[in-house]
Image 1 (cartoon, rainbow, N blue to C red):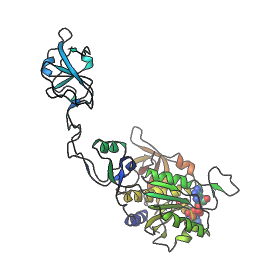
Image 2: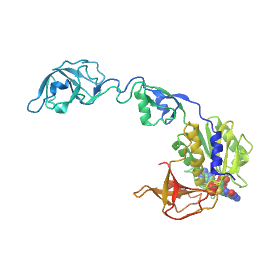
Image 3: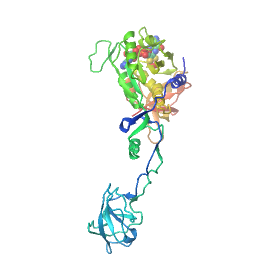
Length: 402
Ligand SMILES: Nc1nc2c(c(=O)[nH]1)N[C@H]1C(S)=C(S)[C@@H](COP(=O)(O)OP(=O)(O)OC[C@H]3O[C@@H](n4cnc5c(N)ncnc54)[C@H](O)[C@@H]3O)O[C@H]1N2
Ligand code: MOO
């Protein structure tokens, strides 16, 4: 028997960090940046208007009011993207649109609402102080500034930032491609009719989705029965296109525990009992250099094992800190008991209501009870030393992805 920490340490010491790859911006969405990206120009690149209105010399409209408007000749229009009117003398104005470059000589923008909207001459009825509605060059990003560094996950705002500094392609650590395979002769595809003793495969759908939530790309395989040759052949075929493989089922003590049977002695794969519940039987190793995680078949065991072992590993492969799910400390709403010496993961509902977070253990804690997992939003992670915790005790809680 080994501890959760020992098993995770072996995994994190073994998994490779994926080599960086240059990708077009949208292909890089969700990947992790592997280079620093600097702005070649300031943002905004030039002083420009924040409003549709008139570029003016502030002194010309200093005393403007409804009773005594400043009346200025309009010398032209400046649209965004325009080089049109590039300079303004005192006493004159130009219509200017939001984002259009401020002409030299102008030092304020009067929004159209403060005027009569004139096109030949305009009557300005309110003063505009110097700098009014001007967006200065470099006030967002300075030239040479690093706008995103290595290790940044490229979500929508970061992709927007890279495009804004003119980058069509970036160097990233790609999302790990993870092949997910359920084993078990009792498994049928959802939608198929069930014969006695059969169940629908849930693990491969759940784990493929969990891969995506952890930043990878999941490839679900059709289920394979408990036939050693078929399991080995399927795994061999998939190694070609996988950065990692996740299987479920066939790793405990049964007479037909096919994954354990066929992988024992292959590559560095080893099987262990880990001091945790659920998720006691675990296997891990490298097959032709590709990490393979053989998770137990009970659905809740497979899911908890994924979050505890596979998620941190997929993060490490992307060059990210192998953090667990976000964790908070919360107050138990009920007593809990746990066997000594194991880490116990309990399905729960976390409530961030006033008075600090509170966590309620779910009714069904069996490793087959997917119903309790699917209505949970958190997992309580009890320590190995925790045996009996009364309501009100503070416990560590992992938030499930939502
Ligand atoms: N004598 C012992 N028996 C068991 C032990 C043990 O220590 N000694 N450990 C138990 C624990 S704990 C677990 S967890 C399971 C793990 O078993 P396997 O990994 O070999 O998984 P299977 O036997 O294939 O399946 C277990 C259970 O889960 C259902 N299952 C499997 N795959 C799926 C799937 N893709 N979708 C939905 N449900 C699935 C399967 O039908 C079984 O009911 O072993 C215990 N036994
Ligand atoms: O570890 Mo098993 O995962 O307790 O059901």
